[in-house]
Amino acid sequence: MKPEIDRDRSRREILQAAAALAGGGALLSVRPAAATPEMMKDAVRAVIGEAPVKKGKVKLDLPPLVENGNSVPCTVSVESPMTAADYVKAIHIFNEKNPQPNVISVRLNPRAGRASFSTRIRLADSQTVTAIAELSDGSFWSDDIDVIVTLAACIEEPKP
Amino acid sequence: MARALIHVPATAKKGDVIEIKTLISHVMETGYRIGVTGQPIPRDIIDDFVCTYNGEEVFHAKLYPAIAANPFITFFTVATESGTLAFSWTDQHGATQVQTAAITVE
Image 1 (cartoon, chains in turn brown, red):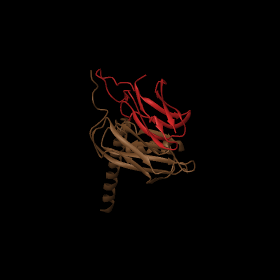
Image 2: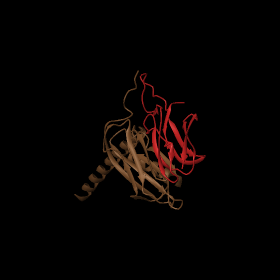
Image 3: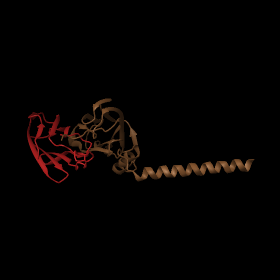
Image 4: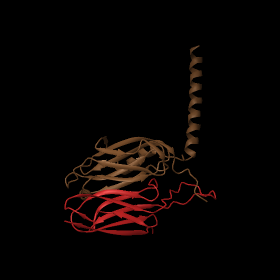
């Protein structure tokens, strides 16, 4: 009996592996219309390198429920004295599910006085938005926020 | 290139942190939309914004298609001396629009 069970299992495993391969191949051949959390991680690594990112210091302000994803008010502020010895060098915003993970990258210096800015962004879907700040001492801090989008950007037809 | 609106306080005390608001009219076409003919609409975005205070850079932003149409950006700077704030927007084709605002620091 025992050898037979083993043979069954191995056959099942082979079938599962084959299915996984076929599925993986199909996924690879079609580029996803939206970015994935992995693409966001890659984009973050491309900008900040391999440095560790800690939670805190950064405050990302977005409405938790967005009616219109075409224009979402967004504010980032970072706790920092903004002196020549201790200031925020850069602030980046990333998203998970837009076609492209980058949103904006801002460079600051002590002349800014306050490490904060606001803008309006597009969101293609309900997703997590992340802000990462780079401080003058080389440390990275982040904040993320989950937003629900009822009308997505990028899908509406332009006026004829 | 386009119409731009800037709000900078006309006067400020030395050392004050002032808020600056900027808005420029631009479609910020993402390149991901399909037009009425079924062809993708080509990307057309402003990808660079810089603010200088008497020639010294105080704020620099790199914009991506996820910035909404008519980019609106507000930020802060320290009022150090009387002079000019220059704002420049550059689109992906390299065309730049510059607008200036004067500030008096007491």
